[in-house]
Length: 197
Image (cartoon, rainbow, N blue to C red):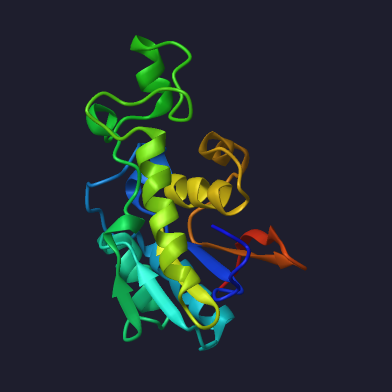
């Protein structure tokens, strides 16, 4: 994303609340799991923290864990669905933990190895760039409800790093992060903020 345009002066990133698979560490892309009760509480706490703050654009992944987090945070009416915000497609590794995958593929990591029948990191980065381009046209701050690995890739793209640098940005469920500017440099202004109920 070029820093010549300052439409989206801030990007607020919300990783969806907890699901059973995020709790277990299982890779979850297209499997459309609901939030746990704790995930619902954390989503509501995000809403209390944001307290109706206005955004020029609110976008969500179409998957229910993101849409429900958006709704419980109080932004359901303003939300537009953007399929580009879907999680990394893990292909044949869907529903499996990294430790389980490494039993047959030692040393494997999503950041260094494309899952069989899944997306490459370049494909995920291309979707992230499309989201950033859409955000750039907004006249003010943008709120995104999406998924852990995808938001980490998007952050690397925002910082003009290679997408595999997303591995450096740990991101918990039900958290708030903010991307913005220091003068004309694109930066992280807040990361992985967990708010209590």
